[in-house]
Length: 120
Image (cartoon, rainbow, N blue to C red; front, top):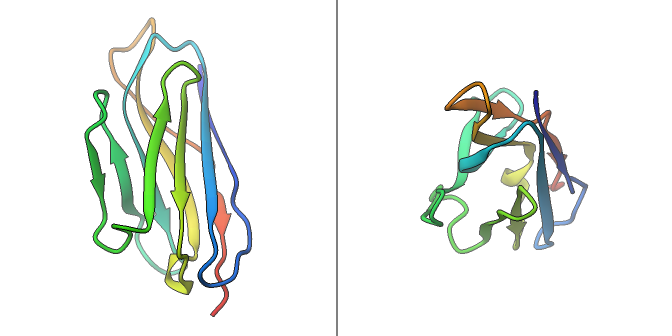
């Protein structure tokens, strides 16, 4: 059993900053790529940022230069530093990870989501 738990979501004013965290726990052999997705009301879930096993980074165009994804492999934790927040960043943010367990080479795991609200 593997669990991803996000934290750090909050209400923040335009131009403010937040740091999201995602802690993975359970029967984990290793974690491959990790990513943050978000889903705004009435919209499809979209990729925000991704970090590979070796640290290669991918960002959505809408967050480039404002958001930074990072990971602490020793703690099995993923982070998203969000700066210069805008109302259009309002969404539920989900953590995603490709996890190797003792029983599966690749498990696509998701967290429950954390809400970020930037009032207009």
